[in-house]
Length: 124
Image (cartoon, rainbow, N blue to C red; front, side, top):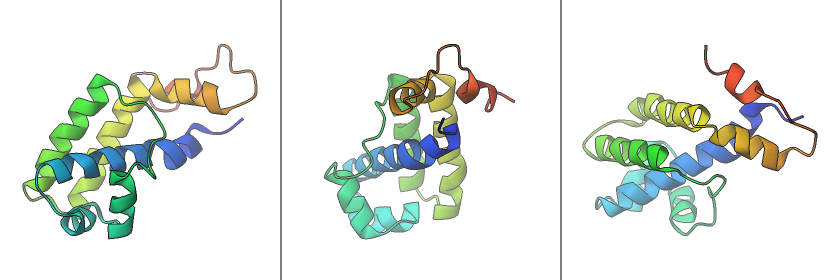
């Protein structure tokens, strides 16, 4: 069984970054500025914008709203250091809404019936 943190690293964080990059581009920032503010390479931003990277999970309304809000905050002046708590907050929403559990069931070939590992590890 894959640990939930592995799914977060491989799917959730890249999806959050991709959606953030797209929102920041919509707000008029260049790929270079987006890369600097997110603390990632410009080529990563390009891949996110072109949907070549970071399409790991569906983004529900709650997650989308949090990403849009965070993108606006970042565009208005947050530094890459300030971005980490925001990404963690969006990730917490992914966990709270059960999206991580859905991904876990989809990605893991073992029987996860009755499993609450994703939720139990992150609700404390």
